[in-house]
Length: 249
Image (cartoon, rainbow, N blue to C red):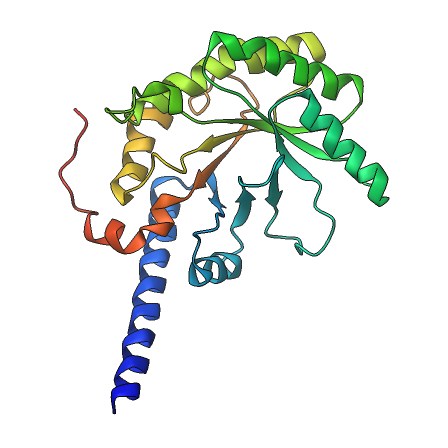
């Protein structure tokens, strides 16, 4: 009798967990239909979450690997992975060199990790130049808004608007003119800062609806992707807090 109660409790927990994850994907589709979600896999990720997201064909990002690996949901992870988030030219060389050693014939696909900072413009330029010179493929630019907080006050969703427009103005458009490389996508790393369901609506309202990347800044707009972590990891809490008081004016 005791064993049966535990089994029923575990099954109910799994079903409720799945329902919460489904709710997140439904909210993503409703609030951000033009954004492709990804999930940041860590050592603390639950097997239930991973199984659910793989079943829903959500791309997996492995930030604990260096360089960071992205697993496209349309491929098998047992295949040679050749999509990487790189932070410097040394990362690019390492990825290309590893492919040569293993006999991986396809060209690596690179995402450049940058930051909303004048100090990151030149390192980002160096990576663009190296990709251009070696005829590698640029998938896009990745950024977070970690430098928008002092450690005590969390950044607002409006910071994403500032960040996207800064990257467009100071990196994407100048480098496109200079090297002829168009940035196909911009990936927002919201792993740590997008933690509640209401943040999805606030991201749309206070950032993406207001930014020129959505509203006709250029004829061919970059694809938008969004890395999520704590939102899925804390999904039970996120479900409970979804009707929390709106914190932004």
